[in-house]
Length: 122
Length: 107
Image (cartoon, rainbow over all chains, first blue to last red; front, side, top):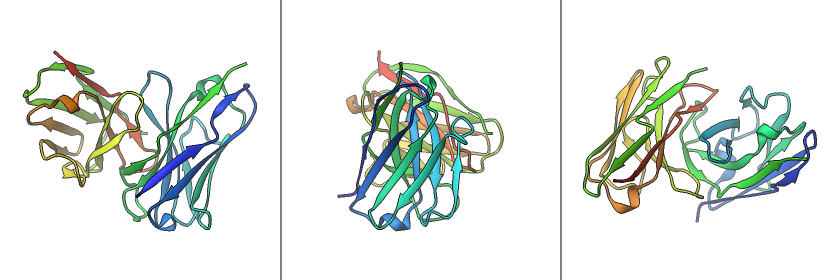
């Protein structure tokens, strides 16, 4: 079935780095834009980044621009989020999500992973 | 960036009630609005896209309406499985933004 599974979360000290992965299955991964969305404990949803189906375009929220990098490997059906210079305010559950269609304009998110927790603490 | 607001922030209702949640955008987003349902410890679930289109598999008691800056999500007859937090999201352009959420709990 269509599925997204995140991994790579954990506890990390401020200023350090972490890389999240999102393994896709059950659909043609290379045809869809993919997003990262995060949710701090007890808070709402915050969009983090998007990458187009072919990796040709990427957009970031201002809160992570210059520190986080989204990428994908379509041969491995995997999405990544490289997080550098982590701060306490980056503590959150990180979800990967699929854009609802392959269209290049922004889309709603129809498939979500289960999330992976990132805790930034000394 | 486009700011999204939702009202109310919390809604207490009973099974069988008709429930309406309002979402407002700080500028026109045409019909580029989605609604999600989230239960504790779970990922959000897409209910409505393009303001009024029901996602496949979502019960027909959910409906969406609106365009421009004001939107509503309606649950025609609240069911026990519907107690959750609901978020609107604009996807008019990157940067995408979510509303702060509306928690629907049991009266």
